[in-house]
Length: 258
Ligand code: F6P
Image (cartoon, rainbow, N blue to C red):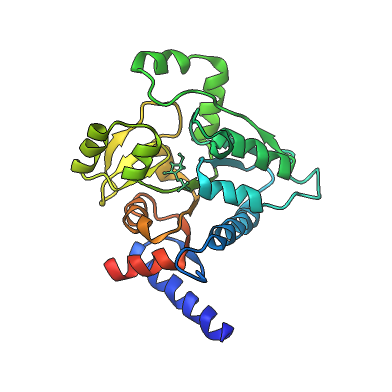
């Protein structure tokens, strides 16, 4: 039975990889419709994936959210305190949300503690004016983290639905409607995209730029739940180097739809 299940999942992974035209897909099986363990499993898979590509001087970028939180939770402590001493972990962009435990800055510190490596944080709010951004970018401490962000080798990021993320960030109803009427279906690292992977809106904050994202060699997206099908398909258009770690329910939904 397990043999057939695994074989079935492998076929599903290949099919989804072809449809999305990306580097790799890893699917966690769902035991039931609403399966909380699947997020743990996706986190574990992602942590193994990071482990297999991490080099002794890697710069790893993380975003916030519950999916990447699970990745950090599932990461095992390194027993070798020397191994990662030149690795650096940074948030992909600034952030000061209400739920501190899911913020990129918190996840960065937790993962760095597990690996025994360096980290930097970036505590800047979303929604900054252009003038504020320009002057903050002149600050040496912010400049140095922006330089690191531009050299991220491995980015581990979450994917959200545009409507849900706009709501989570406290946008007003008419602002959410305006995003949706412009075709926004997905959100990742501070950008909202339409189904073709074109920018609909960009949060005015400090952090990773889309041009940088498009050049990163190792991209690991962690996203599950069938309601994220369109969002995942949209983000997959941005960079073919993507490794997608998702669950069976959303994999099947994407295959049916596209
Ligand atoms: O807010 C950070 C972030 O990574 C967003 O860019 C993304 O849309 C969202 O979190 C994903 O959150 P979750 O994993 O909780 O669905």
